[in-house]
Every structure is written in structure tokens, then in C-alpha cells.
Length: 310
Ligand SMILES: [Zn+2]
Image (cartoon, rainbow, N blue to C red; front, side, top):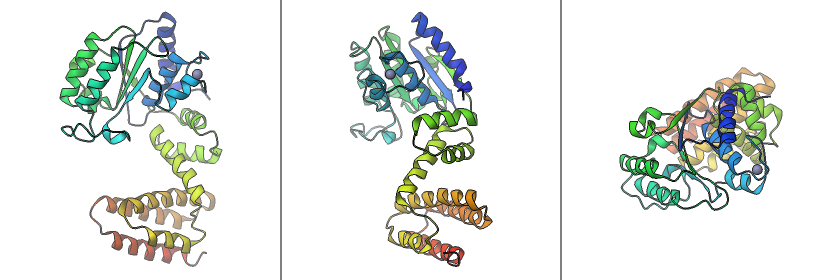
């Protein structure tokens, strides 16, 4: 199946590649989870790939390094919340933002020569989360950076970027992906996933790659944990042993997906009722519900629904 949604963008970049006429900066915008970040990383791979792959699967050294965010010439910047290796130095900026320290570091790197290839690529994910200070510093770099530097700003809120930044970037608007396009991305990213998981992830995620990937990851996780509703006592025991809200949340998310899988197999409407209940409980966990009350409620409800079936 072809990635038709991205074909227009790929064609444009094919021309740009052939002529080696890059604009210094691009904005990739579109709904959350539309695949903008994946596109940006694939673009970087196509620039560095030793096998000359162009938006296709490749496991050469450069492509692997980019996939793992460890390529010396492809720097991915994210909010501190999304970056595990955050130094925690920029106490002045909120966690869910891209602060001045991060951008200063980026600006310094932008003026160094490329290490492995002929370009340096900077991918700024959730670019609208740059603080005002960071935005101004970035703008300066944008104006002065060397020719072989490429900035890819990924954002679902481009209107929140400084107008002066926007005006220096070429904007690509990414649409919602079709089921076929999503399936192709998932098959590439999860070669071991079953066709059923992929199909179901596509149905559930209404065009969002992010949501589809989350589904596949939890489905795989559940399989390894093997926590099925066939043995209600095991489910209850697992709930009983959870001792913090985050743990319970993760568990309920797993159970939810598992339950939908059950529903798909058996078409039993009870599973839908319970899955709605689990969603409700997940919402309540976001607010102030007491952990033990939540656990008790869950155990009573699930026991009532499943005890007769095991
Ligand atoms: Zn490659």
C-alpha cells in the first residue's frame, strides 16, 4: 500500500534533493499524531542514508543512528517533559517547554561542521513550546546559520510560533492519514505485530499515528504480561497489588485494550460496558479519586461481571 498522504510532500522533497536546493527551515504542521515527526526523521534518513534510500526502510548505520536519536548530525530537540535525559538545568522554564538553554546549545551546534555527512539537521518537535526567550534565540540562529543547516520545526500549533520565525520557514501541512497509510507505517515500525493488531490499531486511532503506535505497544506489552480476563482472579490480584495511581492507570489502560480485543473475538456486549467503565475510572484517576476507593470499586465491578465466566 502506498503512503498517498505523504506522496505530495515526498515528491516535493525528491525535487529539492535532486537540485540540492534546501530552504534553511521547514515547518511540518498537522494534527497531533499525524506522522509529522516520523516524516521529519525519514527526511533526515534520506539525506544521510549510505544506501541512498529515499523514504524507504533501511537499516544502514546512518539510518539506525537517526532512528535511535544518536546521529551526530541529526539533533532532535524536544520539550523537557518528553526528553528522558533532561539535565534539569533550566529551572526558569516550565517542564513542558523548550527553554533557552536547549536552544542555545542547538545554536552552538548549528555553527559546527557536519560530522558524518554534508548537512546538519535539527528537528524541533513541538516547536510551538519554545519559550519566548528560546524563540528569539532561535530566530537569530535562523537568520545567521550556515547554508548546509536544515531546521525542521514539527508542530500542531504553527500559529503559536513567532510570526518572524514562520516567515522564514516553508510550511508543509500534513493531513490525517488513511487506514492504509497508517498500516504501512505500523508494519514498518513493528515487523512482529500481527495483522490483526495492525488492523485494530488503525480502526481505533482515527488517523493518528501516535495513537496507533501506543495501541500496538500496549498490545505487545499485554501479551508479554499475559493478563487476560480469562482468569478474573489474576486480574483482581494484580489490581490489589498496585500501590500508586500511575501504576493503576497503566494497568487499566492495558486492561482496556485487552478488553476490546476480547470484544473483537467474542462480540460480547458486556465487554463494551466494562470498557466504558474502565474509561470512566481512568478519567476519575486524573482527578482526585482516592486510590483505595478506586481499587475497591474496580474489584467489585470486575468481580461482578466476570466471576461467573471463569
Ligand atoms: Zn540507510
